[in-house]
Length: 420
Image (cartoon, rainbow, N blue to C red; front, side, top):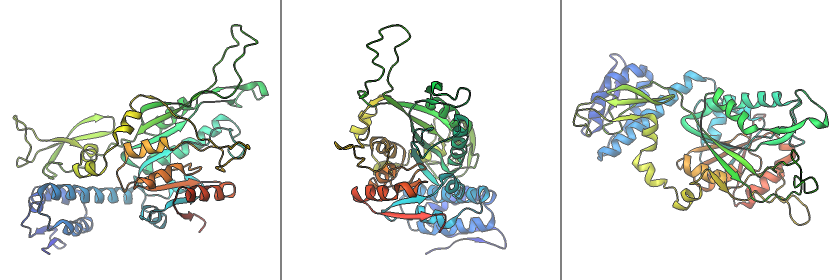
C-alpha cells in the first residue's frame, strides 16, 4: 500500500497517490494543517489508507468525507468532555444485535457519554405524579428535573439530528398554589416541554397529534347536567413533538461533489445550520456564473447517495404519517381478567418509534430512549438494524417485565450498570 503520512519534523503532508484522493488532499492540505494538530493529522492520514485503492471517484469522495467528519467529531468530543466514560460508550456503540439495557438514572448516564454520540432520541417522559413511582412535590420540581435531563440530551445528541418526544397533557394538581383536592386542573405538559426544549437549544419543528380513538370512560358526559359551564371534553390525544438539534459549527467541511476543503462560509440556512460554498475551480459542479456547490453538514448527511439507497422509507409509512393528526390505538395492557400482561404501566405503541427510526436514522445508528419503560423504542430500533439503547431507573420494579418483553419480541439483551 502506498504511503500517506505526515512528516513530523517538517509538518509536511507527503502523498504518493495515483487516484483521486491525491487531488482532494492537494486542494485541502493547507486547511487540514490548520484544523488538526500534527498528532491528529497523522491519525487522520493513517485512516485514509483504508481508501487508498478505491478507483471510483464518488466512492473516494464519500469515504473521505466520512473519515474527515469522524475525526472532526472525535476532536470536538475530546475538547467538550475529555473524561467521558469510555467503557460505557464502548458498551453502547458495539454492535451485538442485542438490546442495550442501562440500569440507573438517565441523567447520570448522559453526563458520562461523549458529546454528539447518539443519532436519535425517542421517548415518553415519566408524567408528573401520574404513577406511584414518579412523584414530585410540585410541578416546578418536575420541570426542573426534566430540564436538567433535556440539557444533557442536547449535548449528547448528534448535531443536526432529531429528538422525538411523546407526551400527553394531564389533569392534576400542580401543587403551586392550591393544594387541596379541588386544585386539579388541565396541565398542558406539551406546551411546557416545548419551552424546555427550546431553552435547552433545540428547535421545535413539528407536533403530530396522536388520536388514540374513542374514549372508554363514562366521565364528562354530564347528561344529567345539560347546562353551560358543565361541559368539558375527555382527553383522547397525545403530542408527538419533533425537535431538531442545530449547534452552530463553523468547522470547515468538504464539498460533497469534489471532496475539497477549499470552501468558504455562506449564510446560515436556518438557525444554527452553517452553509458552505465550494471554491475549488476544479470541482465537477460549477454554475454558469462559476459559483460552486452550496452545502452544509446536514446536506452531506441527508444527500449521501449510498446511504439513501440502503435506507429507503416504505411508501406505506410515508402515507400513514402524511397528516399531522394520526390515529392508532394505545397499547392494550390488561387482559380480560384485569391482569397487566406487559408488567409496565405506561408503554407506548411501536408506531411511534417505527416512524422515528425510519424517518430520522440510517442503519447502524444509535437510538437512545432515556426513559425506556418497556423498551419499545430499543426493540424497534434493533429490529430495523439500528443499535437500540434504553435507560430504566427502577430495576427493582420492572426488571422481569422488561426482560420478558425483550424475550417475547425474539431478542436478547445486554445489561450495564454504573455500579459495576
